[in-house]
Length: 372
Image 1 (cartoon, rainbow, N blue to C red):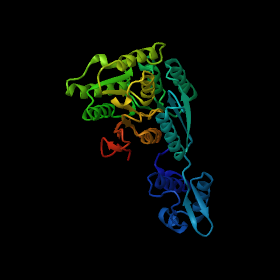
Image 2: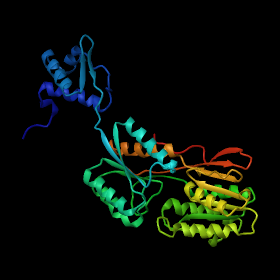
Image 3: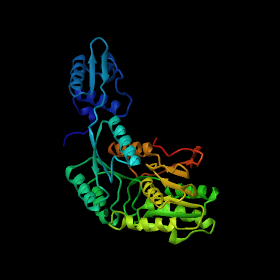
Image 4: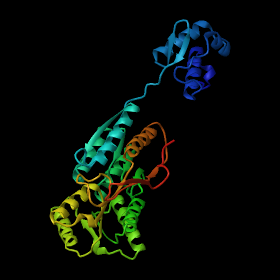
C-alpha cells in the first residue's frame, strides 16, 4: 500500500502542497508575496530547479502569478458564478416595497459574482409550485423565496432541502419547514401603529386583512388585537378578512367600507395589511363622500398612491434594502460552507404624518440585526 505521508511525495508536490496549505489557511492572501526562491530552497531542502518547476506549475493552475524581478504572488481566487433563484409574487407597478427588495438583492448578488434569476408567481400557488420544481430541475445553487403557497407547496420546499439547495424565506416563515428566514417584526409594527392611532383619539379602528394564515398576516392581526384589547375595544366584527385572489374579494371590502361610511362615529381608524389595500379603501371612502379628515389611516409597506392628505396617516415601513441584501448574504454564506439555521427578525420604522403635514420617523428599535 502506498504511503500517505506527504514527505514521501515528490519534492515538487511537497512544495506545491505547502504553498496551497498556506493559502487555504489564509497565511497567504490574494496578492501577498510568496517566500523567495532561496527561502523555499532553505525551508524544504530542495533544488532551485524543483522550486522553479513548482512555481511554474502553480502559475499554470492560476494559484499564483509571477512578476519578473519581483517574485511570486498569490492569485485572486476565482469564485464560481453562483445562480440564485428569487421567487416573488409581484414585481414593479405599485408594489414599490417588493420592487425595492428585488433591486437590493440583485445589487448584492452582483457584489458576490452571483447571477439572480427572477420568478414571478402572481401569488398563484400553481405557478409557485411550477417555479419551485423548475428550480430543482434546473439546478439553481440557492433560492430566495417570498412564499405564498401555504400548506399546498410545503412538499416543494422539502424537495429543495432533499436536493441540497439552500433557501431563505422572506416576509413570512413556515413552521413546518426548518430553514433560514428573514422577516419583519410584524406584531410589534402593527401594535405600535394601533397605539399611535389610539393616542391620537381614535378608538374605533377597523382592520382590513387577508383570509389566509401566512405568518406576516397573522402576526399583524395579533398586534392589532393586542393593542385594541388593552383599551377593551377589540371587536371581531371590525376585522375584515377579504379572500385575496377570489372573485368576491372586492365585494367583501366594498360592503364593509359602505358600512363604515354610514357610521355615526366621528373618528374612525383604518388599519390595512398593506398600502395597496389601503389605497383601495381610501378610494372607496372617497366615492361615498365621507369627511376624510375624521379618519386615521395606517398600513404596512408601500405608501398609498392616493395619500390621505387631510387625515392622520401612519406607515409601518419594513427595511426592504436590508431584507434584500441579507437574503443574498445568507445564501452566499451557505454556498461557502456556513452551517446552521438563521432566523432574523428586523424592526420596521413608523412614519407619522398628521393633517398639518408634520412628519416624524419612529424606529421600533435601535438597529436591525445584521450579519457579521
